[in-house]
Image (cartoon, one colour):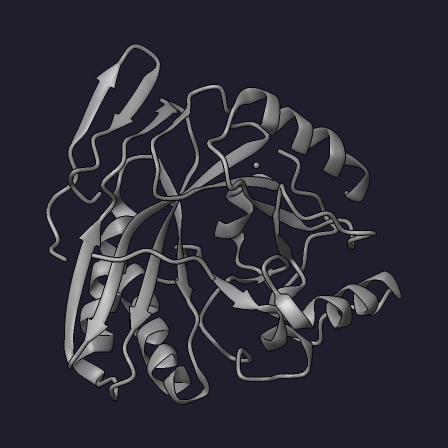
Length: 268
């Protein structure tokens, strides 16, 4: 859904300054959740607030975020699958968060057009699993635009990721809206949520918008607990009671976060 690129895995370095945690990422690295959230979620995912800000590959100072109502999903690393190999690129930009921040470690997976193998799935799962033990991380999220031919590989990756992190660790994935509509390939995946990405959809925007505006929900239950939106794309209406992951094309500020809180309050 998003994009990034690069190589190598190193151990995360963390520095402390007062109330702020500073992730020096030249290395690798919400109370509003109510009863209306989807029931097909594990108890661990409920540790996340109902608002999550995506922090992508750029310097971000998010020390203003209050952990009682907002979490931060930050790009932790990018995995590139090329010619049968696995290359892990750490986040290269600094991220500043408060000591009590709730973090979701997001791992972007990018693959070339060559066939993907089981060894790559196991190595990728191991790299993603390591993020679950980073400071303040309460969940991991995988961002992979898997093609039809890559779905079996992706399923293997997620099954092994679940095995490595255990039953209680929340696993989230981003999902193309089409995966949630009339497609059943997500059914049975060992994850806690699939976040429908409702921005940058191109030709599919009208179909999804019309479906949700008419009161029809996504077919896949895993897609009914959260939504992925962007600050620069507006929707006529969206179903309430969902965890909202919000992307911002610009660096986050306290003013921008407050504007998102105000605008989305009526959806809950």
